[in-house]
Image (cartoon, rainbow, N blue to C red; front, side):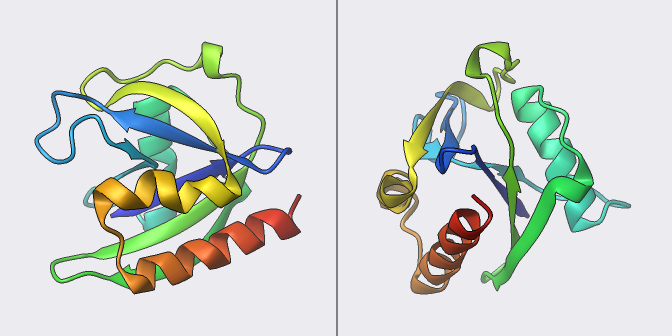
Amino acid sequence: MVHVYLVNNEGRYLIQKRSLRKALFPGAWDVTGGAVLAGEDSRQGACREVEEELGLRLDAEALTFIARLKRPDTFVDLWLARMEVDLDALTLQPEEVDAVRFVEAEALLEVIGEPLELDDTYRAAMERLIIEGAIRA
């Protein structure tokens, strides 16, 4: 699995509302992500997921690896990319995404953490991600 955090030059993070058609957490705010396919590495999977879900082509070199988290049945790689994104220019994948918006770094954990019940390891990685995003600002 990969989770991709897109942050703009103002330090605001792009989040997406999960489609109401999703079996898990329909309508919850989340970040772009998904499964890495056979033959892909984590970075390639991250780029593909961003393009599939948002219609946004991401340069692989723009990604900064933040952490690999072990979950009971999988690993989750967290990636950060700094870029300007015009929300109106995105092409949302209807099966995955109902809406997008930007949130401030301070609100990121609260907005995505509550419905997804992030564990302490994920929260620590998120704090590092937010620090890394601020450093690169």
